Length: 240
Image (cartoon, rainbow, N blue to C red; front, side):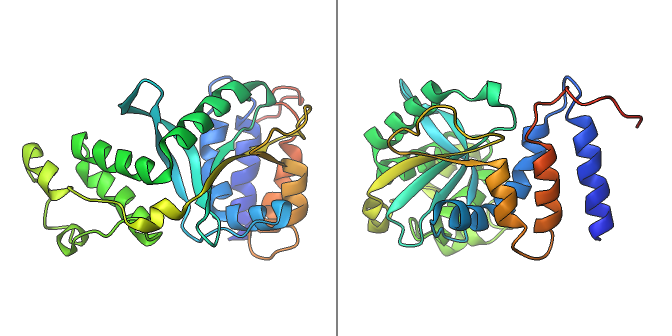
C-alpha cells in the first residue's frame, strides 16, 4: 500500500509542473486528512474531528451566492472557527481576498453563517448534496436534523418546491458560542510579511516536520511535501 502511495505522490510531483494540472485540488483530501495533526503540532491548536471542505461563505453583496473556503475547522471547545486555505503556489496567495472573507464571516457571525447554509440548501437544485453538508453541521452540534433527513430513500426525488419546508431548520444555540473566526494559510513557504491579527500560517517545511513524527502515511507525505516547497516548473523535466 505504501508503495502505491509513493507512486501516486511521485506522479503528482511530475504532473504538478504541467500548465493545467490542478495540483492544489488533488492535494486537498490529504491535507484534510492530516489537518488535525498539523493544527496541533504547528499551531498548538486542538480541532474537532469533523472538518468541512469547501465551506460556503456568503458574498459581500448577497447571501444568495457564496465563495468557498477550502476547509472549516472548529477548535475542540467550539469557540473559534478557522477558515483554512490551502495554497500550493506562493503567487496565488491573496491576503486581500482572505481579509474580505474574514470580514464577511465576522460581520455575519457564526450563527448567521449556519443560517446562510440552510438558506443555500433550500434554494439549491442539489438538495441531496446539501443534506450531507447539513449532516456535517449536525455532527458538530450546530443543527439538529429531523430523522427523515437521515434516510437516503426519503427524498431522492422530492419536488424542488417542497424542499423549503423539509429544510426549514434553525441553528442550535451552540452556534452562537463560536466567539471568534480566524484564517489559517497552509502554503509552501513561510510568510514574507508579519502575520496579521487573526491570520496564521503553516508552511510545508513545518508541516513535513510535524507529520514525520507520526505513523501511517504521514512520513511519506512529509517526504514529498519537502519537494513541493519549490515553485512548479523549475525542476528539470522527467520522462513519464
